[in-house]
Image 1 (cartoon, rainbow, N blue to C red):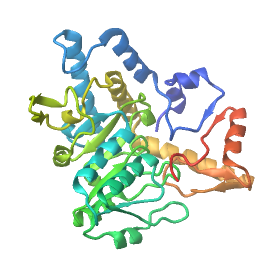
Image 2: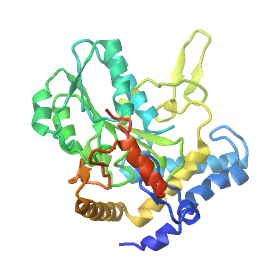
Image 3: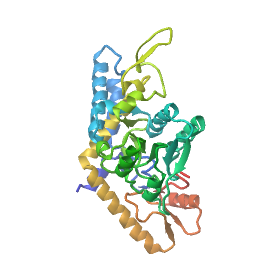
Image 4: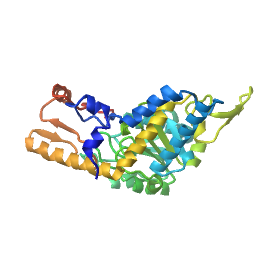
Length: 360
């Protein structure tokens, strides 16, 4: 497997807060020294813009920037031209919703679930409002497990978009994305996946899954804040209009409003990018790859199973997802307000999150 004590020494937050128990990794993760050093190195030795400067540091940083794109492509098994740098999963999912604004009409259907993160449901509410499309919800059981019979019964030629999380940020179940894609594609619908909680914790192969779009954030996988990835099949990215326009996205434009955009992914990367975030994300991926995604998932599930076993011994704990496929645990004390539980844990140096977790 791996040496967990050695790994813990890679994280300054653990070193500096040895008595703190951090259980809020679904929200954001600690960063290893290699990621922090990459960000610091950019600011102290490499500060420059990418794809613009005619000098050595700009050349060097541009190469590192594009090498990160290759690292991401290898990590999720896609072509590098299908990797778009974004500010995070939220922006990526909003960018894909532009597809809906341009391609959906009254009578069309968007399929999703009631357990989605706000970032993967509010953009589609907006699409439905502006296009007249209808949103329908796939049924789930009390633990949030998807009812595939419900999904199959809802699928018809009116469904144009299926959008859902690979892993719920609240209940932790892994949705059968490959099967979902196969069924959706039989009806010529596209599948948009929120990968914020899956990419950091399980091995992802977008070609095997068959997803059309996948968005995720670096800060949930030991990387910097403010940087993420939108994966899209190249032909769909070519058809997708950018959410933001500006320098770097176009090859030329004229005074009579004729604009020639660059090919994907560059047409989606207007303005000065978060270069330090990109370089830090590269190191985060290399760090996770060194440990091994299968090893990470196996270890997290063992920890989750142990914690649930011990919680059940207390007898006064409500577990909402005891059978989840990942390390996410949703719980509460019987008859205790969730925020009160969170505040109590804080007095014991235990970091948790209470509430709806951006889902409803």
